[in-house]
Image (tube, rainbow, N blue to C red):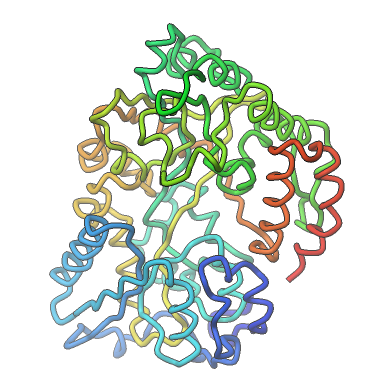
Length: 452
């Protein structure tokens, strides 16, 4: 990465789209994002530029998934304004068009001053020279204390020599389960197995088999595999990692799908679908957003943010960590961070907002909403975190999950290789091919799609 005072190199629009930006609708982007000219020098402002704010308007691009979620963001913005008189934040709820709107405004020279950054596309936008590197800001601010962040959180947003977002949301995975189904079947729960040291993927497969049964609307299923067994970053990476192997080489130029452990994980998913009939399939999701919320699913792959939306009044919810494999317990995360555009005129305030949202001052607003695990280690015992836990959540499960996260991002043309992989896994789950044949067939094409 170039020094923060030099103009970062740019990628073509085609490379940006092929690199995974199309996953949230950016394929319709017409202007050439990489043709934008970043403001030379994206480091901290001089003392005169950093003078007290007076009548400063900041544009914020964020997405929300509900009115309640939007209100949490509004409360957070308002709290920051109160601490910085003269600053007004205008919130644009970008929803599913977040990345497309972000790219459009960047290309048009009117980028937001602060915006949510997701690891799925952070690298491509940073390579295009459109994300501020927070490194010099942190070096110039003694209060930043980057060492306080959980290491994996900073790792997600570190690229080459830069830091392109300040973490504010963390949602490492866990298992939600329907305790009532386990009691009805007379089967030990995942948490009971965890307490006994027997909570493994093999145990999960067995429990899914035992908790599946019934007919029609009374039918219960054992496991949802995140409702998408082909989601490598969101789900599949975990059973692969815990089996003791890597699924991609170190420089991320080749997929390592020929290993027996990789094949075996896909095989047991096929067996759950076709032999045990314990796996949630697309036909089971007709008219259903999340199978777990219906009360007819025994175990669900989840994240911290799900806790605020699980009904919790139609069945008894249980909470357990992700299963262990022969490599122990390894987790994944899909964090969000605060970023700013290189053309923003308010980078210093944007940096301060990033520290605020994920830090102690912002905790009464964002962390207290119950959506996130703390991104800072100093907040893991925070009253705002513990006070927002629902009765069925176990703080120790979230903490261990955060401490076992590997910070892996989708490389290359993620949207395109993701489609290839999903089509192959769909064929496997329908019994149209074997895991070994499917993985062997798609590996050459997926290797090519690792190139930007």
